[in-house]
Structures are given as structure tokens and as C-alpha cells.
Image 1 (cartoon, each protein chain N blue to C red):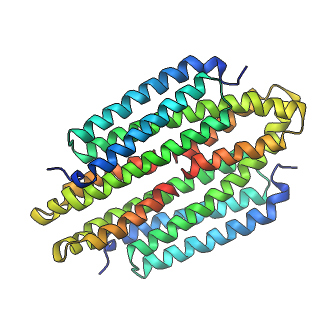
Image 2 (cartoon, helix red, strand yellow):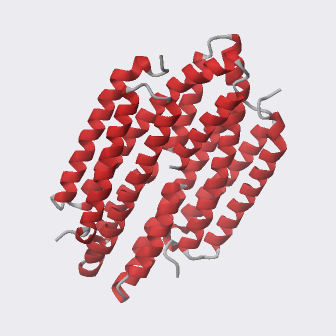
Image 3 (cartoon, chains in turn cyan, yellow, purple, red):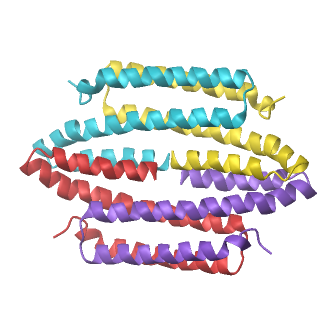
Length: 91
Length: 91
Length: 91
Length: 91
């Protein structure tokens, strides 16, 4: 069983909505819509994607990282999660 | 004609690739893949989306904002672009 | 005369406050304060620094970039500002 | 003893350098230096501040959060760290 099991349906619903947003953005570009309107939609999509990342990150801390800390010292697991957090922060 | 006309094909190709990335992420969640691997893919998608934003922003500055500056004082256009840049920076 | 002349006093006041924030953070680290409290203060400082960046960026667009567009085609100036915006977005 | 004890000297050295950077930025504004040059320096400062945040965050995970997970279920501690990570990501 994986850490985000209990959030799977909510994550899939969010990702489905993001897939709709990306299709909407493609249509806007194809229709030659006004740049700031498209940028606004991209910003909404990035925000929605950040929420998915934060849910996964929290699940990972409560699941795998917690397990690693309880069964070993957890150091490797913390290194791995810091590597990911750095990527999210630095984009 | 819109500002990003000359970049339209490249933008559509990037967005098509991002649509593929989002589908890949949905499959990873559905398959119960390891959180850090999914987060890595989300980070790649966000990075790819940032590139689309930067291309659109540059097109907007070279197109609409430049036109507004040449034909009026451009102040309203600069306010609008700052509003967008703030959204991109603050996510 | 430089573009942010009219915002100089406000910028200096903001920077003075940020200097105070950094001194406060140093004291927190020195006193061994609780990590999340320090991280909260760093986040406030980064937010305050972002505001300074956005004021300077807007001044630059209204000043130098506008001048460059009115007197030449402005392309080099837009390239330069995009380079900076990329750095701000990507941190 | 606090979590970042072993990194205290390195953190203080980094913060001292950042204090120097902020003074340098104040001088640049006071001297009316070119906006993109100032923005470049602010971007370097924000990057340096991010590094401090990431060191503190890692210390916090290896210290307090690990302790909380080993002695209790750690859930409150993970909620708290997620709140901080959200602030860092969203600036």
C-alpha cells in the first residue's frame, strides 16, 4: 500500500481538472487569445499543481518518511525528501 | 494578429508535451507509484509550464506592451503585465 | 536620473526594514530559537524582498524599457528584462 | 539543544553574508544604480536566503520532526512543517 492511498480519489480528481485546464490553455493559444488571459490560466494551473505536490509531500512525510524514521534512523529518507523540496522551491 | 503568432507552433508542441506529462502523472498516481518519483515528474511539468509562461510573457512585452508604449503612454499595459508577473512569482 | 527615483525613499525604507529582519533572524539563530519560527521570519523577509523586486521591475518597465521602445525597437531591453524575470521566477 | 546546533556557525556565516548583501543593495539604490543590476543582486540574496531555509528545514526534519515521530505519532509536527513548506513554496 502506498502513502497517498487515502487521497487517491481526490488526487485523481485534481489531476483530471488540471488535464482540463491544460486543454483549455491549448484552445486559448489556438484561438489566439490575449496573452495575459492565457498567463492567468497557466498561473491557476501551476497553483493547482502545487496543491497536488503538497498533498503528495504530506502523504510521503506521514507515510514513507515516518516509517523510515521508526524502523531505521530515517536519514536517507530525509535526504531524499529534501532533494524533492529543493526542486519544488527552486522550480 | 496576436503577439505569440510566430511562437504558436512551438507553444502548441510544448503544451501537447505537458498534456502527455499530466497523463503520465495520473497513471503514476493510479499505479500507486512512489511519491518522490511522482513529485519529480510534477516538478518537471511545472518547469515546462514556466517556460510556456516566459515565452508568452516575452511575446506580450514585444507585442502588445510595445504597441501600447508606442501609441499611448503604455502605463495601463505595464500595470497589467506587472499584475501577471506578480502572479507568476507568487504562484 | 534613474527609473526608481520617485520610489527611492520608499525602497530605502523597505530595505532598512529588511536589514532589521535579517538582524532579527541572526539573533533567533544565535538564541537557538525554534526552527519553524525562524523559517516563518525568513519567509516574511523573502516576501518583503519580492515586493522590492516588483517595485524595481515596474520602475524599470515604465522607465528604461519604455525609453528603449520609444527611441529604438526595444528588443535588447526586453531580452534583458526577461532574463531578470526568469531569475526572479526560478529563484 | 536545538536541531540546527551543528549548523549554527555555518548559518551565522551565511546570514552575515546576506546582511552584507542587503547593505550592498541599499548602497546600489542610494547610488541610483541600474535596475537590472540591483534585481540581479536581490535574486542572489533570495537564493542565499533559500539555502538558509533549506538547511533549517532539513535540521528540523532530522531533529524535532524525527523526535516527534519516535516519541508520538508525529502528526502535529508534520502538519506544522507542511505549513512552513507551503509558505516557502508560495513565497
